[in-house]
Length: 264
Image (cartoon, rainbow, N blue to C red; front, side, top):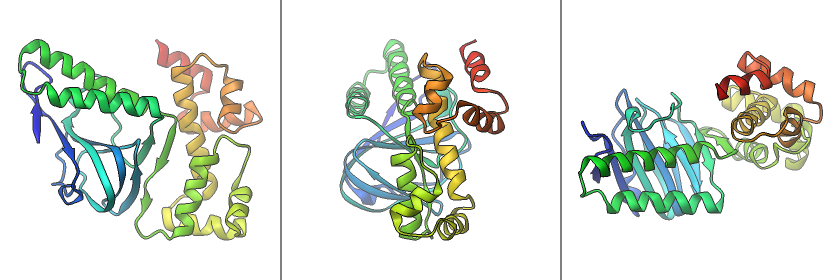
């Protein structure tokens, strides 16, 4: 593991290039420590305190402070693992890390290239180089969180049907579908599937779908100039008023006002 000093005062960023699943058994993170995992190639399944994530090439996840995780299995995985304190990046970080971000091919290649550069320049501890590394690492984290393809980690006890249902939400949330269409794809009754998902995860199938759509909508509101109506349609809402009502209920403010506040 190579320490990268990202501030003139003190380094907390450690970057590791891992090709051995056995090395992905980590000590519990501290009160301010995060760990970023980016899969360059192969696959790996990790368990974050009883929640599973199946990560493939171009997937990334952030493990939040005071968490423990371990690799359960993998197929020829090659991973980038960065452990760092929140002060190492110039953006706000979530307090939970129960999400997997799917990067498009261009973003994934850029992220891996920057991480490779950070590792290659670790020996240069000049104040200028530390500042540059901090800016580059902030860009990496920000790029990952800008991805609109996000899925939740699944409780370890969940059966394959629940995992398949959540994968369908991640794949089809932008379509005009509801629990009935998801259940139909899996050959199950909607009420049965909804109850199964609620028992396994604590949230209904409909709630998972709404949260996935609203999360994608927030990214589009932040990163594009598209109208609220266009964004509603892009995340699976045919009726913009329906979308605005869910958004306001979830975030406490209408989408247009939320966007204005973000830009101030």
